[in-house]
Length: 503
Image (cartoon, rainbow, N blue to C red; front, top):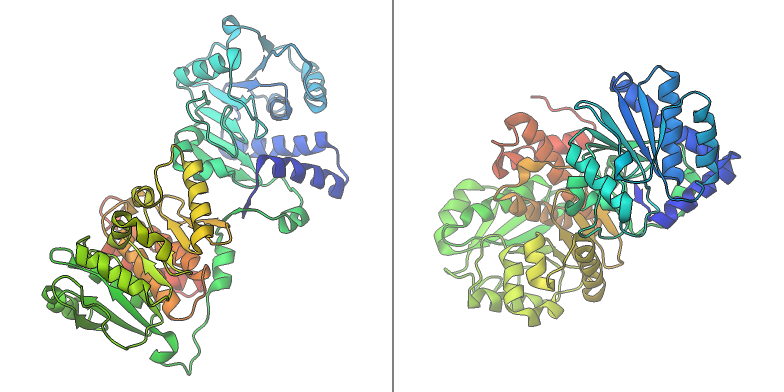
């Protein structure tokens, strides 16, 4: 699913109108009808509703919805924020239709005319849509604050009023929605953590916009839907052998942190790597040989400083989980970079780079970095909002020729070409230690067997979240652990390949 900007959304509407031979009013009617159907499906039609409208097309959607509710015996009050100017053509047309069936229409000119709302009444926010490009001010700002203080359920039409579609809203007033009914595709604002408090539960309603436009129009941002993921999966040839699927090297672990190495190694093998060699400190040797009998192990001293002093060839090298940030480890990373082959860098490997930032420019092109937001900031500097952080990620991925997997609820896979893929699997139960180590191993395993980038990163992140969703159903979000997620990777593969487990 492509994520379009506000300008692209407007162009999408216009292209749909021309292509389908309809009017803008007919498209507005279609949008309102999908909202009405959603409310009908959720048994909300008989609930008293207060529909708050601006004078733009978002307000027109609200008026059309009000008419449909009234025509089905709904209890509806309509409030229009007075701007002193006429509304859009479609707004005015819907207002004319509405005047024919109700007198319960009020114009808000000051705070004295704000709606009086009972405790369980529903507020429909149809003030401003995706075209908003300046903060709410004056009476609009006061109205948003008033609605938020009421604490009533709020259903936002397309986007909560005051929330910018494509940029940071900062400290501006925004109506806090309980539910957002957005049209056709998600908006970029919905995918960033700072806006979660405004959107509530998001439902995407199909209003039949042009498929032709969606396919042809380029987009910087995209959501990884299941259909995209399934097309990436490569079937395994029945005559293949372990050498067919590559040889991975994972450098991980330290005294007290061998769990990170175990999790990464298990995940790597569960994602299909043909062979795996783990380079670990001597004190972790017995742990790895016992926990992962399928993996080969190399002792490399207590500080990993002798890692990869070998002529053995690997298809991918991964480093970071649990290795610490001692000077010997920083030196090891510099030595590995001299091999000039793409790597997967996570956790303490990223922290080592943050300590010695001169190494950042030496990261081999095509490498994958998997930072969480704090690791990202230590590497590339702080950002005052999520939009700026994403912009920094795009800039750094382009400049360094690397892939950045910026972890979060909607993990963002940023490519050297500036494209961003947002993941749609996963849950809050994955906010636990070890989950990142698992992801590192999964991406490593996919690269090892020949999945190209960015497919390996996109598929790895999706599988990681899907296995987490399966684990949460099996163990609960509270109880699930990183090791449980690893155990569910196989079931995630079966789910994606439409095969059922025999268990």
